[in-house]
Image (cartoon, rainbow, N blue to C red; front, side, top):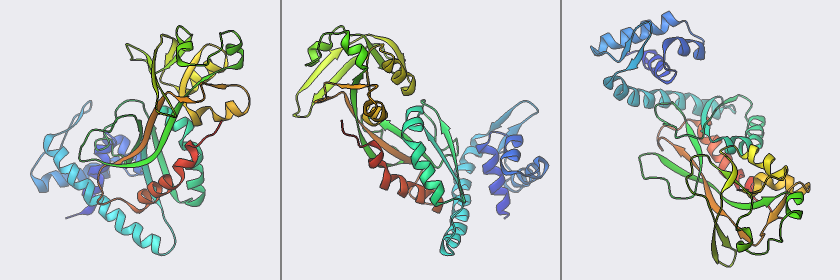
Length: 302
């Protein structure tokens, strides 16, 4: 058994082809191809169907990948444990997160982590769509969610609880009637997070537990929090965003919190990993770092 066969097969599957895998791990394409061919001959099974135009992992190939990935992770884990004992930690951490999390939650955390662990490389994929953590070869996915995530074989780790609030620009508020209660929001110009919604409602909760629903029709909706914040600063309407996303703009006087005794949503930030077993040292270290520092990022007061 040649462990390189496993390693190269995993990299080819994760990079969706021999060419991308060769570029990613800086190894000749011909060398990778020889290892895959040798692996298939030993198993007497086609794992990858490949032509000049097509690359398809067979059913047997996906089954083999799931087990081979664990083997490769265990080998890398063994190496990193030894490295950690001599005071070094290196390797790659492959993560995926939404655009909002990438823009407003992760930057300072990633910078601080890499200053502390300069030999670790973080590779970040940004997508607001569902990402298959297994097939994409990711070590973790970071997602915000209001409801509990579906039960599965994946492992969820809580990062922080995030309050969403209503914001508007001072100029916009001078052009409207005073907003003293949820009913005062009826008919107001609004901005909406998301773009697939068919109906829009702010589900407000006051700190004493009272609730109120305010239907609204956004004049602009987007799944880009930065775009919504800019539109709000420009006086286009009221927006619901995570409090920490707008903290600087509130402190600078560009935005004002609307109905400060109410919040519009309460969402959780969670880390999702494929399994508790075989977690590489650098991945576990990054998870621990995020869990220790996450709540400090999302805390705000205004």
